[in-house]
Amino acid sequence: MTGRSLPFASSGNRGDLIRPDVSRERLAVIDLSASGRRWSCAKLDAAAEGFAASLVRAPLATNARVAILAENCAEYLIAYMGTMRAGCVSVPVNHRLPPDTVRYILADCRAELCVVDAAREALIPPALARIVMRSSGAAALEARGPAAVPLERRTPPPTGEILYTSGSTGRPKGVVLSHAGQLWALGVHVAATPTAGERSLIVAPLYHMNALFNVSVCLLNAIEVVLMPRFDAVAYLKAAAEYRCTLLSGIPTMFALMARQRELLATLDLSSVKAVTIGSAPLTEALVARVQEMFPQAAISNGYGTTEAGPSIFEDHPQGLPRPPLSLGYPLPDVEVRLVGGTGDEGVLEVRCPAMFTEYLNLPSVTGAKLRDGWYDTGDVMRRDGSGFYYFTGRADDMFVCGGENVYPLEIEKMLERHPAVLQAAVVSVPDEIKGEIPIAFVVLRDRNLPLEELKRFALEAGPAYSHPRAFVSTTPTVLPAFRTRACARSRVSEAGRR
Image (tube, rainbow, N blue to C red; front, side, top):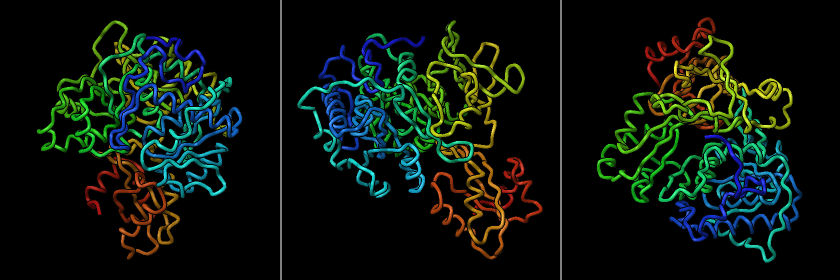
């Protein structure tokens, strides 16, 4: 399967996700944030077109940045598509970040408008123009269209969207993505004819590349989308059964939590599930076996992609060889990959492909360090087997993934050392059945009588919840450096117990 042009996106606009060759009355989205409200292709398309027209009338100039700060809902998709149709740039924002980080992103991208749900309106600066989503589903944006006069399309700028991802220092970086690159990536996954009878359950937050891309592929393939606002293991399993979903996707943490619902699983009919894709964090054979037990009719695959190079890197083997359980697949024909800094069959993965990001916004030196001669340094250490399949083995730096979110030990250490009682801190990751990896903190205290629970409260208030250390161990300055190694950390945590 290779990237190809999309005749139904001849405008060259990433926001055109409703195919003209699909029945207008066909179901596009079931929005579980609005009691299962159903959106036909025609209705979703008209709402996006109306929103685009309202931006042009505002007026917002071509290339203006429109931020989206909300939980998953149909309104999110309307704003996302409509922004790009208007020739503006869509900027999804992680609503789980601390308020000061959200405001940093809004300033860094120079957002001129923010589409925000009511629960998060207080996060945005008072001077920033906003459209507040109503709690009753997508009524706020639906009311803005369709336009009385058909939208006169403006030639889109090269940039279609900016997705923020944590960087090597932990501060979010704006990944600038072009219309052309993302349309190429979509072309890899879009069938020549609509896919009948499939229904995908999507709960990953739409500020992430994998969720946005997954929804886009579904809409272009005329696959019905069941969209959940947030993840809950019980609600997810019930939705999969109730709506007879055929396609599931998510991070390992989600499926590990679902596997714990043994009593519920025994009562549900999940035989409709045909395929499960798991990605965004390391996968184990044990979890694959548990997922297969939950969904015995499903083919299970290990997905891989990056925000910078897109999700279109690996596919099935061209000779039809079965994909090993933990393999990421075989490189696509139009994607160049190489392993550097190690042996011939193991090293850091570098990628060059048509979906490559343009730059890190406002960070030319960082862009130059990660993108050289069109090759993107993923920082992911990979292994290649004799058949050409690739496997993820670790990170070149000390960043790790906790529940699908990037966590940087140095940033946690700096945060902990802002506490007046902490002299030094060292943070490492240890394996966790549910989260994949979790942070553990070793601290040198000025006040040895400080309850370590106070540090946990401090960490939860000072940073994202997903990055707070799950255990604290008091130590001395002379032995602190040793705890920066995982083996020593695991041994020490085992001895001390988690508090």
